[in-house]
Image 1: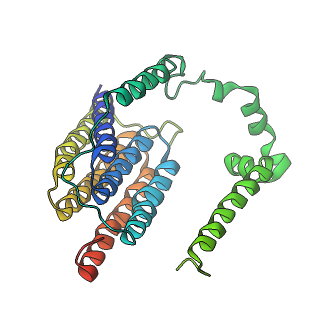
Image 2: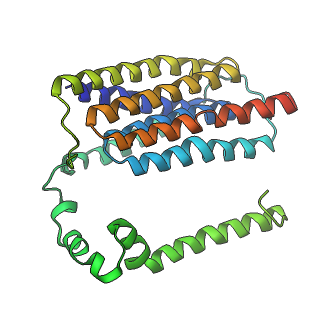
Image 3: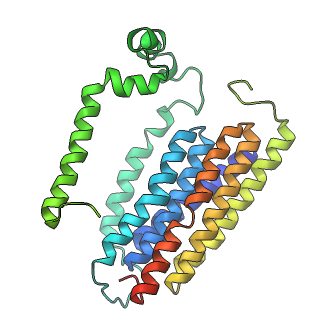
Length: 179
Length: 99
């Protein structure tokens, strides 16, 4: 009961933060509001019993992300605005609202949080990994084994993409290092 | 400690959840300052308070779930909470304003 109250409050908080981030006209204020959004999401990850995701959210959302955004806008000029918030176009808002409704219709078919009969729990792929991961890879953490061993090429591809993006940024900025 | 967490009586966990919910409501109230401003400093201090609230809420949740390892998340937040304030303060002192 109290947990429902807490979840409802958090949902409202995250919603308000997201809307404020989108609607504030001033970019610096948007970045500050986005930091609050990240804090709300971290509380959600803890409620969903995912402390590792919450830790990532802490490091990326609260730490690196706002710093990167600040460093980026520090190199730009600040346009002056008369308006406090962005103006909302009704037609766009209608399209976005309809899209959210369509996405919302899929929510009832999701399994309940923590449900022992959720497909991800008793599906045979999961059972295969749990039964064979240690014997096949020698890695004790099944998630790490899936990321680094079973999907090793996929992870290598992701790392390549990130590396290529970093090189591209350096080429565009005509610099030899990130500092 | 079992997989579902060590036993916390429903009364105590309910009270802890309610306290966490109260802190979240407080966060919504404080967020009005982030929305309204009017200066950047007001907004930064508002987000700082929301960050401190987050640390408290996560610590309360760790107690309510009976999972002391969740406290690590609260610790990381307590350590990272000041980063944005320091960045904005540094820009403000060195250049008069951030941009």
